[in-house]
Each structure stands twice: as structure tokens, then as C-alpha cells.
Image (cartoon, rainbow, N blue to C red; front, side, top):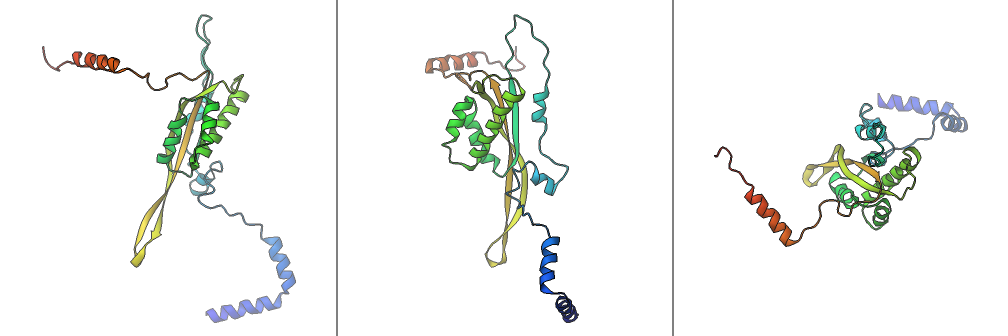
Length: 224
């Protein structure tokens, strides 16, 4: 059966001239665009569109930009402007991205961009581009006057899609490999960053007084 099919295909090729065959194939077949699994991850949700058209990653974070706050009283302190931005399906492990996200947390935008230029990690490029996009959004859409008057109030990572593959080993065995993706979230706030973002450092005497106060305020449950 295979010999008959091969002979019929040869006869069909001999009946059609080679010059016309090249013209028809060149005109009928459009240029192929190859999108691999890993390179299409950051192309605006192309990864989700290829594998699951109903999953576009997290969306709630961007809804905070549409929040309408009530008007303030004249004696109240003006509310600081902020902007939330994110990048989803980054081909990078969320465990590795956490170090970069925590590194820039609490810095001013200019200082964070300056420091990220010296971070020799793959995820630093995505974090830097996301901060620059958020800075541009703050000026164009959220009425921030000076783009350098912003600081990173929140910077954290979320777990994305995980694709499992097979890796061949010796003696006919195989192992499982995971291709991890992550989501990066950032919130810029207008103003100058606080001097101590996490906790104000304490002297040993202050730490001792704090510990002594905790010990004296202990209470035995169900006692008199």
C-alpha cells in the first residue's frame, strides 16, 4: 500500500512543472511564525491564549486603579496618589523573583532603577520594565506632577502557571521537570519613602524594655 501511494505522488509531481510548483507553494503558504513555549510567556498573555483561552492571569490588582475616593475636608491631609501595575506570566521562578521584589521594596523609584542596573539576575529586567511602565502610567493617567516623586510602597510576587515536562535519563528512565512562571505586582505611591520601611531599629536597652513589658503583661488563661 505504501509503495502505491509513493508511486502516485511521484507521478503527480512529474505531471506538474517544478517552476509552477515553486510559485504556488510560495504564494499559498504564509510565512510561519514560531512561538515557543518559553519565549511567548511575556508577550501580553500569549502563553495563556495558546494553552487556556479562559485564563488570563490575575486581574484584581489593576482594579485598584479605578477606585473612586470620597472628597476630603479642607483640614485633612491630602491623599497621596498611587498607581498599581503588574506583569503576568514571566518565565522565571517565583522563589527567585522574591529576592528582587523584596530588594526594591521601600525605595524611591530613581534609587530602585539605579540599583536594578547592577543586579545580575534575569528577573531584574522584568522588574525594572514594570516599574518604568508604572511610572509612566502615574504621570499620564493619575495626575502625578513629578515622576521622580514616587516610591515603591508594595512589591511582591505571585505564583503563575507551571508546565510539567519529561527529562530523559540513563538506562531508559525519565524524570519530571517543571517550567515555572510568576506574576510581579508593584504599587507606586506619591511622596518620599519612609526612613524605616519595616521597623525602626532599636538599641539593646530598648529591646530589653520591650521584652520585659511583654513578659509582665502575660496572662494565664482561665485563672483568677
